[in-house]
Every structure is written in structure tokens, then in C-alpha cells.
Image 1: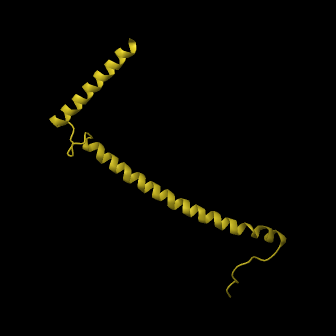
Image 2: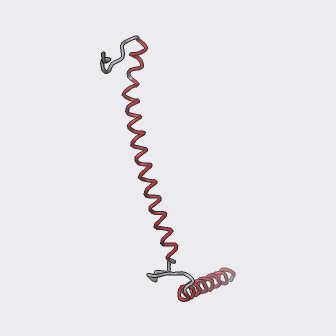
Image 3: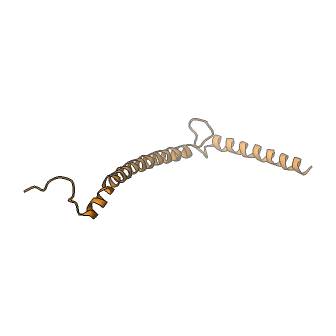
Length: 97
């Protein structure tokens, strides 16, 4: 009995919300040029957010590539530490005169 009353109340609430949304759209309170029941301001904000997130994802990807390069370079250089501890000369270019 209690569940049916709650369900009827929810259905009536949804009907009222839909009717008010349609009425507000028809009166011009919410602009909706393409009549998809999504206000244009929300569509604009979503597009701005999508562009911002895309830019951030690209920048994070670039930084990850840079960090990966640096880690590889550290891996290449780590083998020189034992050689330096034994007193060997440093490998690399000869000093210019």
C-alpha cells in the first residue's frame, strides 16, 4: 500500500516536471534552438568543458612522454656509477683542446 502511494507520487512529480520543462521551453525561459530538450547554455558549457579536458589530456600525455625519456636516460646512466666508484675515467666525448 505504501509503495503504491510512493510510486504514484513519483509519477505525478515526473509529469509535473516534464510539463513545466516543456512550458518553460515554449515561453522562452530556456533557449533551445534545436528542440532537443537540453538548454543551449548547457550544451555550450559542455562543449567548453570537452575542449578543456581534451587539452589537459594532451598536455598530460606530453609530460608522460618527457618523464619516460628521462627515466630511460637515468637507466642508461646508472651503469656508470659502479665504474665511477672503481676509479675508471668517464666515458663520453674527448675534451676539446
